[in-house]
Length: 122
Image: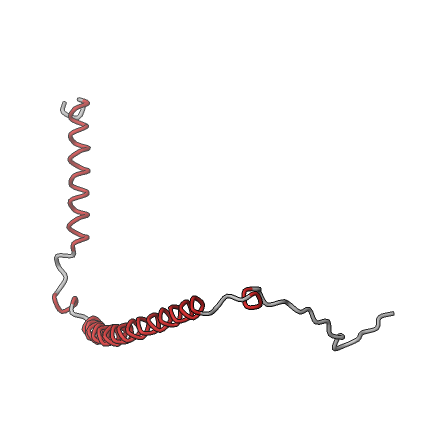
């Protein structure tokens, strides 16, 4: 009589689905796996390689940091030289007497040269 009722069938279906997913979770967890099967020598080698690569990366980062610090010092020195040259140029322009010839922009000369290669087409 329980299977003829609609509620009994829904409870039976829900219980079957619950049991199915519970069994699926148990099988996916592999509780029967041995510890020897999980300790793969390739994983140990991979861990050693990762450790070595991390150490190499740290050394490379130190070299990059040192080079960047040296670059920043050289850049600051070069920018100071450029600023000093600009200030000297501005001072020399301010100190020079303004004459009519020096105030004019230099003239541009157009030069026409003969072509290097003469080609004749028919």
